[in-house]
Length: 116
Image (tube, rainbow, N blue to C red):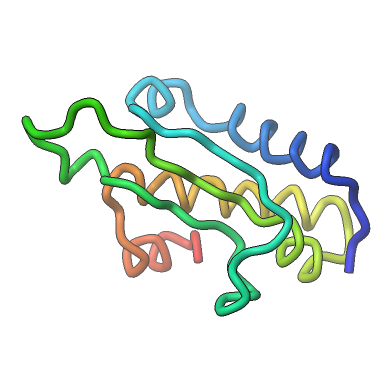
């Protein structure tokens, strides 16, 4: 298990977000990214979670709603990593994976693309 402060992990998430191509981040709409220490006890190994309405499912009714939420979990990510380099790579994969859900891409397609 890799030891890393909450602040340092938040920086990793920020850096991963910075590496998302600007042409994609410009298309993101009404979504906020959070870092939490641990997921729900029912899913202790969950690295990230997207909650909201994907862009592909929004219609005329979509107005005045709270932002979609992407949560990246520090504990499970650090438990599976033994180096900072691994944590950087895993955080980037997780961030991209959850952003892809915002764009309406499902888990099967993400797995096929290597974003398990």
